[in-house]
Image 1: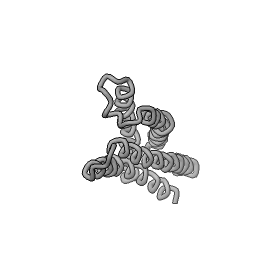
Image 2 (image 1 turned 45 degrees about the vertical axis):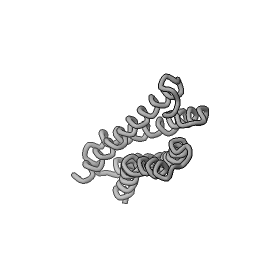
Image 3 (image 1 turned 120 degrees about the vertical axis):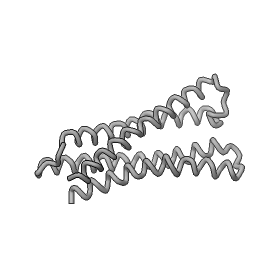
Image 4 (image 1 turned 90 degrees about the horizontal axis):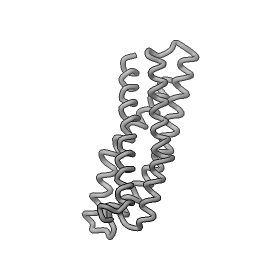
Length: 160
């Protein structure tokens, strides 16, 4: 039961990240642009930002479930193969997600709010646009930790 619960949390987390990045974000911006919505980039950013905020909450829960089930499996025995590596990877995945959700995402939202327009419409040398671009890139790269770590953990579970 512990293995199944941890695997379910891991699948929701990794699958959700892949769906958000590959399907949801592009769809939101494309649909708004295709319907000629005024300030489509600003509205798209607000919509996707809220989706991502809610997903961060789910990710925090999935990370907590994953870590707790791994620890319980280790305590109750037998320990999964590469137990320490799995625990470290799960912890790093959760740490990256917490950093993204609690530090980076609020900074992005603050820039969007203070600009009043989509940051991509600001002049290229505007400090808010530059900072938004830097944080957006950082946020995207941070998500690689739970994706790659999650794929590693899924592979290990399949090998057991």
